[in-house]
Image 1 (tube, rainbow, N blue to C red):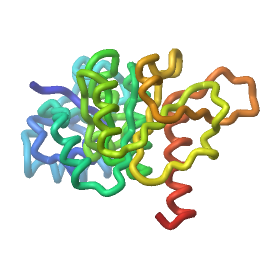
Image 2: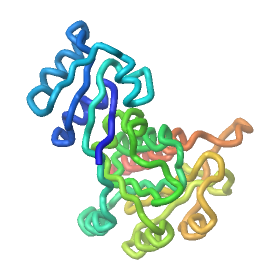
Image 3: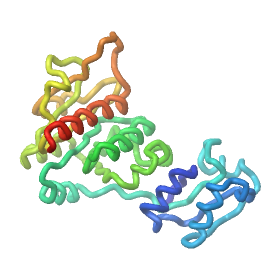
Image 4: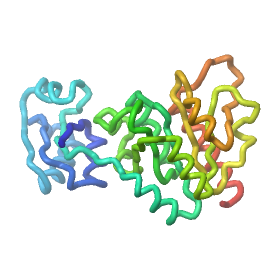
Length: 248
């Protein structure tokens, strides 16, 4: 299967980390006027077919957005990592850091969470097969290259997967809106799976019941909740901060 991606930065990232995925690239024929685009096309010409087009509307029809920056690429659709990869990771990594996203249906949020995961050293991101955004051009665009680097696994049964993690000694910490235990009060070192829920409903009941610990982010304002990507960034920063303080 194939899909389209668009924009200079995401295509540059794909070229750096997954060059074999390209099938065709469509670019406006006046690309020579854009230095970044010109350099990118020179690299792409060595590995795939370049189609020059005069009409920006052609690019818009393929991806449905006007912010394509004059270039789109037809690529092999990204395959999710298999659940067996998770077992390999649990055996190989001494202190794995795992991000679990429960029912994140907005592709912008999934992309932003992947970007946070890459920035803070997450080893793998897990999402449920149902009730989650799929990998698409929007996710790749927002992730700014992280979608090509961070392993993403879709699992059939999220609770069963969390229980598997616990069998391997991984502490599962869930985030909820209201808890007597705050983020900074929790020890987030060692083997850790951080569970984030959707902005509207949070993590589901059975997911919450499976967690070893439930924490919340302290807030001064009466704001109902934070965007899940913002909350993910805050929590992952705290994980990194504790590691740096303890020289872990």
